[in-house]
Length: 109
Length: 118
Image 1 (spheres, each protein chain N blue to C red):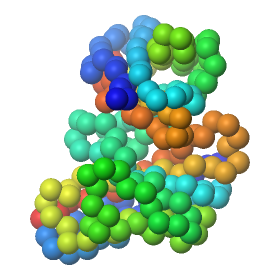
Image 2 (image 1 turned 60 degrees about the vertical axis):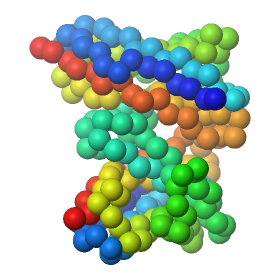
Image 3 (image 1 turned 90 degrees about the horizontal axis):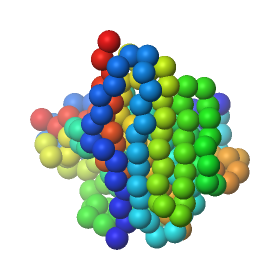
Image 4 (image 1 turned 90 degrees about the vertical axis):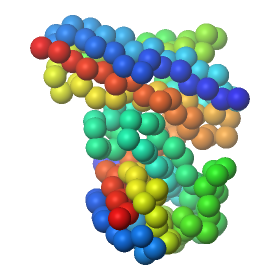
């Protein structure tokens, strides 16, 4: 079966750095997405990785290792507004997104 | 760019009635639109994939006669919840794939519609 695993909840301090991990087992791979979702709102796109390595975009970076079926989202200089759920999703061989359950990130002052 | 709208943003209806939700891609063409449902504190659940000009493909366990999907144009897809029941109360989100997004197949999400059935 297809499976995406990510921690249910994480807590971090304002101004710090946090890494959210995602491991996956899917039938085929056509890229991995990270989305941010605030409570009661739709997801917003953060990053897309299809090749191994690190993609940096401002305070957010995303890493992918296809051989390990592993990705992480790195958030630097955390701000209170970063409190949200972070969803990992993998596009399988049918170009369909397989979603993780999301990681709720709590930022404390 | 790449904005997706949904209407209405929230709706309350009585049990047994039908509700139509619209999803529009405002500044791009979308051959494929996706309908998701999300219950509180849970992840997105894909309900169906909607392709312009053809019948929608429903996920296992989703009743196609209850959740009617119409994708009449490259910018509009509608989801109609027929004979709604309280258990249909949920957050319904659509997304659209941009024809011109190259290889990323990125999906752009609408703001969601919160349905409450009383």
